[in-house]
Amino acid sequence: MVEVGYALSSEEHRPNDLVAYARRAQDAGFTFALVSDHFHPWTDRQGQSAFVWNVIGAISAATESLRIGTGVTCPILRIHPAIIAQAAATSAAMMPGRFFLGVGTGENLNEHILGLRWPPADVRFEMIEEAVSMIKLLWKGGQQSFHGKHFVVENARIYTLPDVPPPIYMAASGTTAAEVAGRIADGLISTAPRKELVQSFRRAGGESKPCYGQMSVCVAPTEAEGRKIAHEWWPTAGIPGELGQDLPLPSSFEDAAKNVREEDVAKSVLCSTDAQAYIDKIKEFVSAGFDHVYVHQIGRDQERFFRFYEDQVLPKL
Image (cartoon, rainbow, N blue to C red):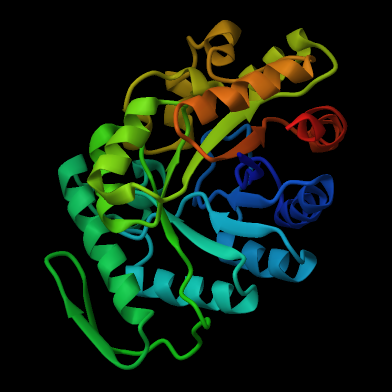
C-alpha cells in the first residue's frame, strides 16, 4: 500500500497560496504534504521563498487531518539546530501527530548567505549527525547542554514540547547520505525511484522505517504545454550531477540551465494527459521500495492538477 502526498513549492507560490493549496490537497484526498524550506528560489523566474515556519503555523490552523513536514530543512549553517528544535517542537505541539521534520545537508544556494564557508560533503554529513543528536536531546525536555565538534548549546530548555516528539526524516540523493539517514533518522526522503538508495538506507538501520519519494509532474491541457511549462519554471531539473549543491545564486542556476532543453527536463518531469502514466510512475517508486510518494505539480496551475488527481488518479490507487 502506498500513501500519496503533495509537494508545497515555496519557490513558486506565495505563502497564502501555499496554505490554500494545503487545504485543497487535504480535501482532494492527499494524506500528507512536504513544504520546501529555502531562503532563495532555484531561479528568479520562480520568484518566491517564504519562511517555512510561518507557513506551517498557518497550515496547522487551515487543515485538520493533513500531515505536514519540511521538505527539507537544513539545520547545519543558516539556522542553528537548537532553533530548528524549538521551531519543530512548536509545530508538533500545534498539530499533534501531524508534523514531521524533514532534514538534509542543504545547498550553497541557501546556506552561504551568512558568509559562512560551504563545507565539503563529508563535513556536512558530520554536521547533520551532530545537529540531529542535538535536536533529539533538546526534545527530551529539561535543561540541556551539548558540546560537539560543530555545534554548542548551553543551558537550553525547550518549554513548549509536544506530547510525543515528531519523527525526523532525512533527505538523500546518494548512497552515503542514505546510510547516514539509516543511522540517525526515522525515515528517508528522496527525489528519484532509485532502489539502491532504499537498500542502503535499510541496511544502515532503516529496516522498517518509511521511505518518501518526490515525483515531479506538470499536468497541463496537452503534453506539449506541460513540457513547455516545466522547462520554463523548473529548468534545473535538467542540470546533471551534484552541481545543485554548490551553485550560490539563482542566477547561477539560470546560467547552468541555459543549454537545458525541454526534452532534458521531460526526462525527470512527467508531462502527460494520461492518468495511467502517473499511476505507473507511482508504481515505479513503490517497486524501488518507497511507501510514500508526494507529487510536485510544476507551474501556476495547481487547480487543474488537483482536479485531475482527485478524479482520475487517486481513486485508481
